[in-house]
Length: 117
Ligand SMILES: [Zn+2]
Image 1 (cartoon, rainbow, N blue to C red):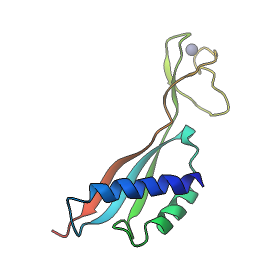
Image 2: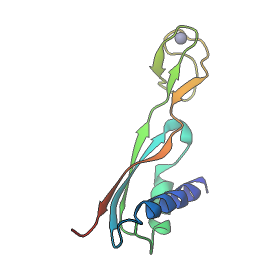
Image 3: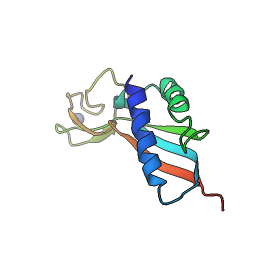
Image 4: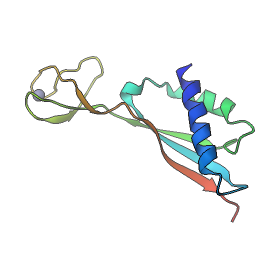
């Protein structure tokens, strides 16, 4: 349950971020998830609903922004978005590329709270 452990760490982080705002409710949590992070959004949403019960995140919305994989090709020097995860060849020159610049992310981008004001 990769998604469940991800969700628990989100709940921990957000709960901690809310400490200076007693009574605040979370409206929305926005995540950035790279295509290589192998997170299933459906399962993530399900776990989020479960794991946030009776926390300040209860009833909040989880918004997932998927980030494509971007590689830097050391062969031709191009930085490109990978069109498919099936192949790690440079879309430009066809050489194998291993330098992943983006696509492994699993991070909270933003949290929207309602502090009752
Ligand atoms: Zn290349």
